Amino acid sequence: MSKVVNDDYPNNQKNPLTDEQLKQMVMADHVSSATNDVELTKGESTNVPTETIALPSRGLFYPEGHPLKSGQIEMKYMTAKEEDILASQNLIKQGVVIDKLLQSLIVTKINYNDLLTVDKNAIFIAARILAYGEDYEVEITCPDCGEKSSHVIDLQQFGEKEIDWNIFAEGEATHKFSLPASKSEVTLKMLTHGDEKAIEAAAKANKKRSKISGVDRDLTTRLKQVIVAIDGNEERAYINKSVDSMLSRDSLALRKHLKVVTPDIDTTIYFECPHCGHESTNMQLPIDVGFFWPGV
Image (cartoon, rainbow, N blue to C red; front, side, top):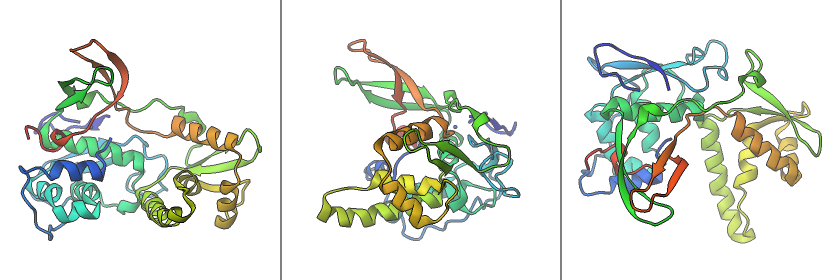
């Protein structure tokens, strides 16, 4: 992940912790019980350095005139105020601690709900590097022998995932994909933080129903959110019904397509177990308490 660096400050750069992971890590004794009334203002600070971060989306999927259309976002270095946010038991219980942290760090004036999920991931890693540097010491459990070992990971090594940008038309926030079985053409968008909130709300409602039916609807819920039209029909009721009856061959092809074309930060790492010699070239970046509380 590249960014413009302020020469007066450390040359730093770049998936994010889930709120559940943060909940576990902050419950540690070293973190004080924080106040319920942390003041959350967007990037408001005096004499706090900032950096300009390059976004994985390159700004392509934001509308003309949007502050992030340039493909960059300005964010500040973390301060003790943000550490209060991370330690806030109230925010952790609400499941919003990561979002409140990022909102406090972002200087560029945006509607946070408009922020693409893929860009949010990059901002998350950048926040950690700006706060504590690029070296991240983490304990990894070998998937083969089960032994634990300590490793230092350079967070600046992570670059953009390689995708074919040619499938995205210039100035278009959506793109089209032909389903192999039905031959229908679906129009797709990149999900935003607002979309993820809608998916989460729908998932909670579905869980209540699943207690009766025994069926979770996470897969179809996400597809309904990412599809904006089917064969040109943008009616939400039609899209929802079509997704529910989508052939499994089409559903699988669509999910594979989305995985390949969605921009993101590639956070795979190389791992070699010092105990048994097991090697892995595609392990995902592990997250533990040391990510935002190094040395704890």
